[in-house]
Image (tube, rainbow, N blue to C red):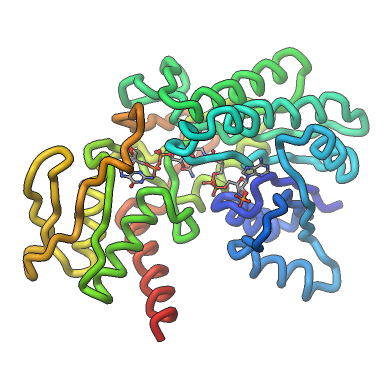
Length: 349
Ligand code: NAP
Ligand code: GDD
């Protein structure tokens, strides 16, 4: 019998990588997608074609749904009867969560509860549950952050996710549900959403390499992040659900870089060296060769409150799950550049 997985957030970065990973492992995969006025399936188009449209025995199915709709979630859980649920759906942008705090709380906090309640009421089999928790929950706590670090969120997103994290633990302990959270540090890929900093930098740098005009408008240059590759992180999601006992794990690379360093490296790989001038909101990055301004700080991209430093200690996952990231930071940056170069060159043809 093939295992059945249900993934919320299937159209997102992690949803696409996880679906591909599970399909290769011979799972039947059901994905929940939101209705939108324009189609946004581009990350899963290939697998939909291969495992649904062109397959004699389809193993990939899509369902309309929304984690803010409890009837819809419980109906899907009852109808599909999955062995494993991966809850990846979220309003995942930290800055946007300051603008849509109530919606973020509903989707990222209560959305988790809706799945757990549906699982608790489902009596035909034991369903395993994975929750995508986040290093944003650590907020102001100093690095390196591990499973024992105090949570101190600094955004509506971090607070909503912390509710999701705790309610997952509470349902595990109260109802003996196999429910666990991966405390995921930042992870990127060519499929990263375009308003997250890594993708935004790579896009602007590639554009500059082609048109010699593009200026990257950026916010806080000094924050540091622990950036891994999404492929490594979705594999870990699956590994956590294959363990005998449910538990929570920090998933990180244990190294961090500043936003400024990410920018310097990206432009360097494209053949441009940056000289920085000015301070604070007047800081600028100049292309050493041409003397042109290529990076400008813009107050629009600052947050009302910032998480300054994130660097995870994922020794627990290393020892207990035998997991460690395979793709290093430099490879990640190069892969993102290569993908973007191909895309923009094609567009310009
Ligand atoms: P993403 O690319 O932003 O994808 C989020 C997904 O959730 C999208 O498919 C989105 O649908 C869907 N979604 C949003 N609101 C929804 C709702 N109300 N109902 C149903 N679906 C909804 O995020 P990601 O990078 O793949 O991250 C996956 C999960 O891991 C998220 O929960 C995120 O908070 C968490 N996480 C991510 C990172 C990271 O660095 N990537 C780190 C820690 C935790 P649309 O495509 O329609 O928008
Ligand atoms: N997005 C963005 N845009 N961030 C900028 C910019 C900009 O123009 N300029 C500077 N930054 C800084 C942010 O202030 C932050 O310190 C850092 O770059 C990373 O920002 P994001 O890429 O938006 O990621 P994030 O760390 O806020 O959140 C991501 O990681 C979390 C895990 O720590 C998201 O994927 C969350 O969903 C995830 O939980």
